[in-house]
Length: 194
Image (cartoon, rainbow, N blue to C red; front, side, top):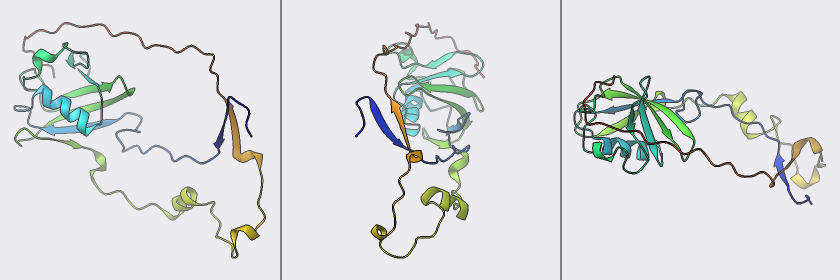
């Protein structure tokens, strides 16, 4: 039906991104409520991997560019047992966390909480989502018209080329490898970062 190198993509309306979602927002941001005196960098890595579903998180202090966590093996491992307070992170400090493997970046604002060694993500979407409006239901699930009586095979079928787009895949382009990241050196010096 389609020549080699062509794929079929049906035309459909896409839902616009939710500005309150920390994944699809233009500037994704989420809060991390934790006890800064007890949460270690190893626990922070776990929070990013489990809470934000990151695979290889890297974290830097916003505005300073100081590396707090690195996905490179051995680069920040010597700080794994230090608490966030010991390395100079305090309440309200903002971290830019990115996952190199998923090409995803999110801003994480630290919030002091007196719970013992636990963490939780705080987003604007913690409240229940409002029900969709009637207009949105029609736009998302149907063509906006009421169903007509009778079996679906008895209605005339409209064949239109405007519902289909053919995109040619170009396999001749060479794959581009991402640039290598350079190592930075860390010291054991305690500096107030925020």
